[in-house]
Image (cartoon, rainbow, N blue to C red; front, side):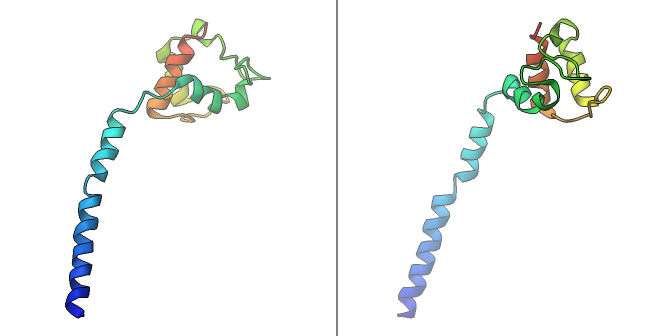
Length: 108
């Protein structure tokens, strides 16, 4: 009985190890093929509370719906990363910040 139980335990361990073996590779593959962040979606989620639902500006916050006519993509990214006036730095980071700057630069 002990021998049968031991065989079952080791057999199960080998089976489970074989089944889980490629999991990290699949996750890495999905990461490599992940789409670029959606700048518009991120901006609409992260910026509307201060800049308004249509990014039209509210109170003392500037309009973003035409920011591309005033600032370049790099300048917009600089504001996102470093802040300006009442806007704190780093509300959006990394690739998300780059995607938002790219999208906002098209808003003219």
